[in-house]
Image (cartoon, rainbow, N blue to C red; front, side):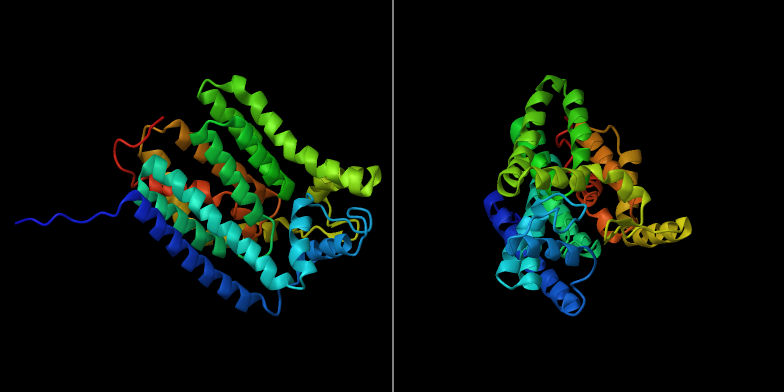
Length: 336
């Protein structure tokens, strides 16, 4: 007499996935807290909290202190700074973003390739975010969450306005999220829906107008103009200069050093890259979603030409991972 295996319902599977992701996120947070306890206030994190300190003390951001990042990271970290919990409060925010990003990646993978494949995508994202310094107090975990929310709204909700709003918030954390704009245009074009691009653009503009408008109202036109410059206008100097005012640009001066850094960081993710490449080359045909993931991964990987740090891999990781789990999808899954 044959036994029929028990398969949990979708709701039970989702609940178990949430629990598993929460446990993994907590463990990775504890490891990050232990590792960072004596060295965390360095590099970008130190600059972020310095700007947060300016905000808390009643100073003028982008005037009393300047840093080439959009404003949302400084205001987000002002809360743990105000509470005197810069390390643990910042890590809690980062861990929450990574946990939620894993859930969104899971839902994307689940809808396209199957629920176990989706679960694997979320789990791989958490683990590889840890390798990519994604559990450090940096901009990437914040930006990535809203990038994935934007992608989800675009691909599955068919809500270009909501997708744009999420993309605009992501841009408010990190400039590289601007790459979402041509990527989303490509997806709309491939679906014959480029006429809806105006809704996407309106959505992107809305949170950015609110953020920079709030700076204008709270701090005046000089601070607003300076915030726009240090968010976007400084791009050329960021690529070519070693210092931006008094702030180090953390740029590799020697091309050989840059190549060495790139090679070492690529070694961390070589298996993901190989499996994703094999999925694209050997498993045809590609759906519009697959093409979008491939272009998104390549676009965000291109930022490694600017800086070769581990955290520059973070924004590309979910798209590479989704291509990896695609190889193990249920046959007959969505090929739209």
